[in-house]
Picture 1 (tube, helix red, strand yellow):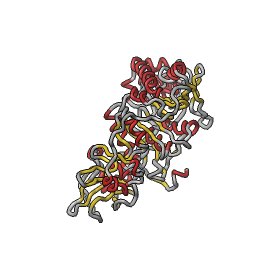
Picture 2 (cartoon, one colour):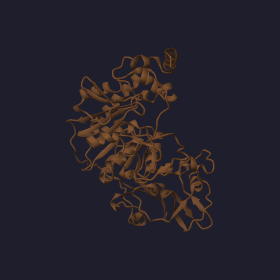
Picture 3 (cartoon, rainbow, N blue to C red):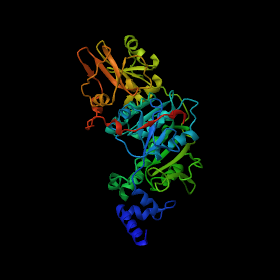
Picture 4 (spheres, rainbow, N blue to C red):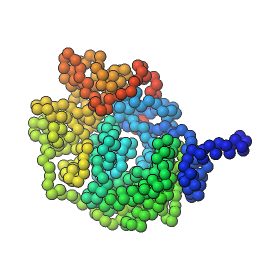
Length: 481
């Protein structure tokens, strides 16, 4: 390529991006602006994470994400909406750079004792599902999202994943300050100016220098609000999807100067393309798309020193949420949870991922959207199994007859169409696809009622026999890879 053609291409790239952004990164330490801008013109890598508890296979012709045990890059983007396995929670499309929280947990978080983790800005749910897997059963994740519509998406994502160790909340960060010393780990994936996502038109169109300044101040407020909820020696994982120092390393320096804390150095020796950032003793880690296969990302880790000790919380008044003996007897065979984990809220019976006392503490301070696993609805003397239960890791297998569906029938079920199948058993049945539960139907003799959630149904037109265009899977257990 001659120099004239190269200069012309560079000019086209520079014209794509805001002038203020180009001017700043051209002088920014650790960034090679010409290479970064060219990389932002390229298509985004396609990546996903497998749910090992539901789906042990790996995508064919895929490349592992180096820092995530169940993460894979795909050669092209499939139609997730057309795939029943996606709706069943077998995998989740997640940006590869953000999967690095797994490496952080490996290096800094001890799961040998019970821990409580807060995902402060959880929607749409990729990091929350990942955290749920990382902490495992017996530990508690609170996944929060302040915006109501996004909190609903977060709840849906976690329900499909089958996570039984999560409570979803919709609360402002300031509410968590009332839970002093409650959490061992807080992940603050802070709302940011989105420079790392400039491959999308939305991120480009929303960027401005004024908005970046606003984001920096909002991020400080969020950390200020949530800092008291960390235990002494607790861990703050701070991340953004921007390159802006005022939202990244300068905010870390602000936290260190304001609070008793200690910046933790992450060992990235196995990942040579991750950029170590050290500005005035501030250790951060930059994921630049011209160097790594992923979107732009920044992460830093701080250990809290001083402040609240790990202590038991005793709510002044506990709500009366215990189900009756009859209600417990009616649903106890549906779940692996102990009777002590069951609560009743209105006409709903839930299975908690924590003790009643821990739940009451959250209940009195936060707006709870999803209290673990919704097991059943109580309608007079009838008990209707919840869609949550069909997908949950806490459900007991063998409770209901299972009808295996082919692809077209599975799509019809997910569209909430009338099913043209013969169910073998009167009453409640689970329908599955490739051995994975999709949800409930009820055979009332002369017809089958489809109980897939109305708000989740597939609305787009999916051609018959689209199965051939879905992800191809190869043998080999991802849990042992």
